[in-house]
Image (tube, rainbow, N blue to C red; front, top):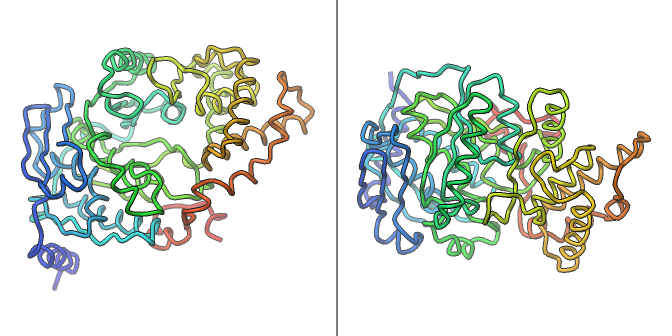
Length: 446
């Protein structure tokens, strides 16, 4: 009997290979260090520099099959290959990952239907990577930044022993600021030690080696190339050597949005939960929690004595290792804690509530006057407004003056955002038909 799955695989691999070029020029491995030089033409079009990643000493990349070694690179350039219109090949690819990539391309095409995704990445050989996992379901790996999202996920799964993975090279932890990284990595380690977890750190130029501006000009649907087409796909690749060599079955990535955020981005269950390789899978976490829900959740754990005052680091102006208390994320988080009756100072926000409210009012007024705001920002402020209204309706006393906030019509401003004007709303029902094994709340399938 013909194995249809194998037949499909052979046809998929062989047919486009005739006109394909190798995506990778060379790979250099030195124990825990990786450097990937891309195809010259591909690099000149889409990349600023060669890719590198440096792992901790216990991650010996020389023990990995080539198909896993190249994952940190290929998962960051996958969407660039698709939009290039060209077919490229790699010498080998993990079998599970090969099928995951087919799924991911369907998701990206559904999210951005006006953008031509005609390029392909084809492996010359498919490898079935297997191992004996050293950690069972009582252990998990979690992408960790010290922010509200990853801290909430860590607390939600506090019954599990966790490997907290953090990368140095993100926009908020730039490679050119080693002093900031030294301070922050100590804080990450301190958090892990406090709750009985462990850490694993990566240094990489994954955030900076791609010419994002090139892609921004290729599709009006895509407002931020990394967030729109790479984000959690890239994280899956960058963390792959760690999970495989340390024997973890699951990587959880905390949500930054919810089912109700209706505009496309590369971090939701149809992205994460469709990624697997070498028997390892990703899980998108807490997608049913708004930012305010997470604030309320952490506040509840603290009130119940389940966790001590948690250190949170949410700041967008991350030049120093403290919350500035003046940027969008700081102000939303501060107002969120005030809205649920908490003192932000107990969560590492140093300004007084009165000064923070004054700053937030000035910030919102200026943002609205300049028409410089995003859908997500307005949505988060509207959640805070609704929470205050609910508390007032129950007859609760609000310690601070939020009358000015209650008078803002956030929904009217949402219609002026770039997301509303230029992007197609997420079609959860459409994606659920493609991938019925991924659960979606019934209200989004009507």
